Image 1 (cartoon, rainbow, N blue to C red):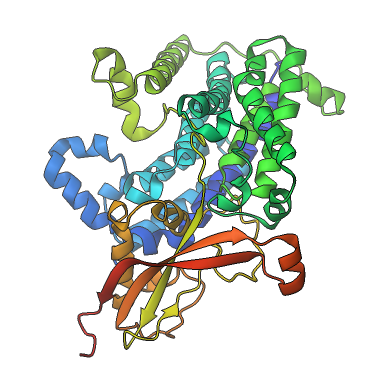
Image 2: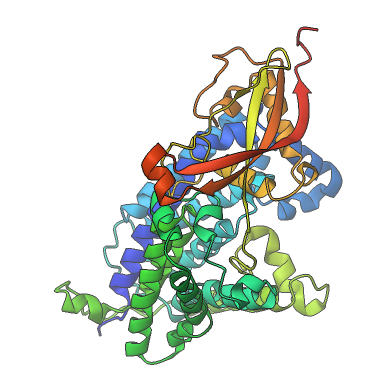
Length: 480
């Protein structure tokens, strides 16, 4: 008997391994600066506070292996384990065990990253990883896994995640009341105002309004209408997969949203079936799989059914204390049954927070970022799926007063303390290893230049200084 989703599952799991690898690779460069012993928000202090306040409930509130130890060596070991597990998953070695390890390690990181893990993309990856533990074939080198084809429940739950990412995002766009989605101006400044624009986004930004209005209509049409093709006959589902894949490729090339769009693109592969790949001359084995253990079937149905119910409750009744929402509350710390809603409101301006250091309080020298707009002549890059969490968080912090992001003050303090991990978050150290006596942050507003300005000056950006964002933080060893 020919199974229907061997190739889509194989591609999905290989891609999922690469996405996990990108997540761990990004953290390998930043985790010590973010939550290390001398990081901005040390995990040791955070877990100690959680333990003091919650006692034995702490393991549920913060599900992380770092309870064993959260120092720099433990963080290094955790990321190393994640990188190895993601490579094994990519290479199709022990795929079920590898995807479980990836999910547990990534959850351990997310649970301790505090302000640096407040992204929907983290929940998307954890949910996909958890469900994939039921989707993945067993064995050391299972190949296509013809003897253990994808179960209907696990396949549906991943397709359900794909559907919810789109549909719930469409719903919140209209429910938010943001006028930009209603008057079709949501995309007019989208390409310059996102966290990390790309150089292709600069070109698209300058297209006429009718184009941007058209993309709003297409986006809402895809998210609210087209994705229902998942539940229609095969030919509609495959056509839908082609359209949404093109949409995701367009987003990937014009904005850096880390691994988010790669994951959504990959989930779309599960709308296809083996017949598509058979027509591309890929062999699909005709193997009659052995019967699954009935106990395992019941466990899978029970666990994924519980998650399915929790995903519905999370969207419709997220903050309720009703007994009906108990499953969503139970699973909330694990982030495997999430409510999604991307771009409910559109950012109208682009602000950037710049760290500056000084030894005399008069001359201030900026710390150069690795990825964020700063030098107006530097071309915006394409970095995804790499995720610089430090710079992402600065974009969110710039949208409100500093009191909403007190970690910025902590970062300033780490700079004057000379934290090596925090200094590696920047492109270079303008003080060459000797920390400045004082630090401050300054707020800038940025815009893309027009075509004429870029042709004359080579500048991709223009900017205007708006003033000091936070106060001055000084070293306790600073000279008077």
